[in-house]
Each structure stands twice: as C-alpha cells, then as structure tokens.
Amino acid sequence: MIDPASPYLSYVAAAYGACAVVLGGMTWRAWRGWRRVRDAWDRVQRRDRP
Amino acid sequence: MEPARFVALCGRVLPFAVALAVAMLAAGLLFSLALSPADYQQGESVRIMYVHVPAAWMALFVYALVAVLGGVGLAFGHALAFHAARAAAPLGAAFALLCLVSGSLWGKPMWGAWWVWDARLTSMLLLFFLYLGQIALSGAFDRQARGDRAAAVLALVGCVNLPVVKFSVDWWHTLHQPASVFKFGGPSIDPSMLLPLLLMAGAFKAVFFALWLIRTRTAVAASRVAAARLAGGAR
Image (tube, rainbow over all chains, first blue to last red; front, side, top):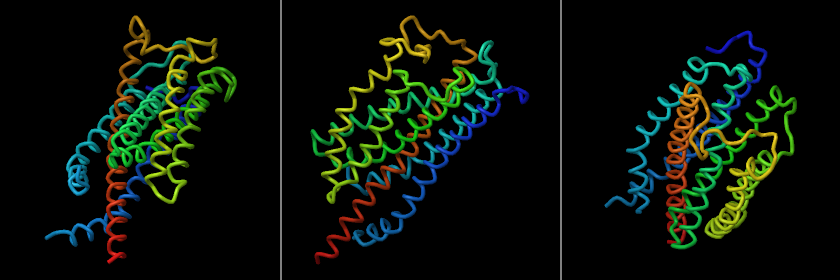
C-alpha cells in the first residue's frame, strides 16, 4: 500500500492525476464527438431504409 | 466494409470493450497503488512507472498502427483505413503527452531535473511533435482525402523515429535507464512490479481500443452524413 508519509506522494499523485485527466479527456471528447454525429446518422439511416 | 455495417458492428462490440477497459483499469490501479511494493531505492516514486511506461508503449504502438493504416489507405485507397488512422492519431498524441508529463514528474525527484535533453526524452518529444504535425496536416486541406494522404505520408516517414525511441538508451549514453522488460534475456524487473506494469499496459490498450472504436465509428458516420447532405443538396 502506498505510504501517505512518503516525500514522493505529491509526484505520484500528480502523475496519476495527469493520467486521469488524459484518459478522462480522451473519453469525454470521443463520446461528445459521437453524440454530435449520432442524431444526423440516425436520420440518414431512416431515410435510406426501404 | 459498408459504413452502416461497420457502425452497427461497433455498437455491438463497444459494450464489451468498455467493460474490459474498466475492469482492467480497476485491477491495474489496485495493483499499482495498493498491492505492489515500494522500490528499495526509489521508494514510492516507482509507482509513476505504472503510468509512464504503459503510456510510452502506447505512444509507440499507436504511431506504428497509424503508419500501417496510412500505408494501407495509400496502397488500396481504403477510406476506412484513413478514418481509423485519423481516429487513432489524437489518442496516440495524448499517450505521448502523458508519457512526457509523467516522466517529468518522475525525473524531478529521481534525477533532480524536470527535463534533460537526453536521447530518449528528445526522441519521445519528437514523436509527440510528429503526432501533432500529423493531426494538423490531416485537417489542413479542404478535401479530407488529400489531408488523409498527406498525413499518411508523414506517418510513414516518421516511422524512422520509432526505433530511435526504442533503442536510444542502447545507442547513446543516456540518463534514462535502459530497457528492463522487452530485452534479450527476459525482463529484469521483479514479478511484484512486472504484474502491475503489465496490468496497466493491458488497461491502457483496452482503453485505447474502446476509444478508437468510438472515434472511428464517429468518423465513418460523419463522412456518411456529409456525403448524404451533399447528395441532398445536389438534388
């Protein structure tokens, strides 16, 4: 278990924080991109359906 | 593959990909923060390795993937390959950035410096810039197809940098430590640290795969929607 008294704790926290920001940011951007296109895609699919 | 079929296939695969990514990330974080020991020399700062090294591996892997997809797109004119390459490049850039930032956060307590112009660090920074150039080039043309082709050429040329990143620690005397996992004679890292490292590497790969699916699906759908709008406007 990580030692809360470690002098390196702030560096470890910053690295995992950066990881959370990068992974979270990528996920948010990917999902937002899909949500923007999804409705238009559904309309095209409905129109093309015989 | 037909765009509608690809989008439908992504919709079916995605829940499993997301579940795998979440499960692997949870296991990876549990092992890297709670169940793995501190290093006898580096103390708790060694836990930065479980973010830094998988991010570096992913940055290299995604760049190779983007180059292969670009090559397939150039050779066969396959639109899906270009969509997939365009979807992967920003993810690879994000992993390269995470590698640089976490490396800097590890370097300060261990080396006493946030940054040194060491061969490994410099070649990784170059890889990040190659990603940025590729993303910029892809969107720099009025016609997406021209941007895709230009970005694919840059990706293929930039592949020269991949062995430089990997072998820089062997070719030059660097402050950065040499390879301890992928090397002749097997890993020299203790199993208690190798397991969390591999778990986090698997988690990053699973996260990338899930996000890559979402982004490729978005790119395919967006191009289909744009084509339908053009056709609608022409009628």
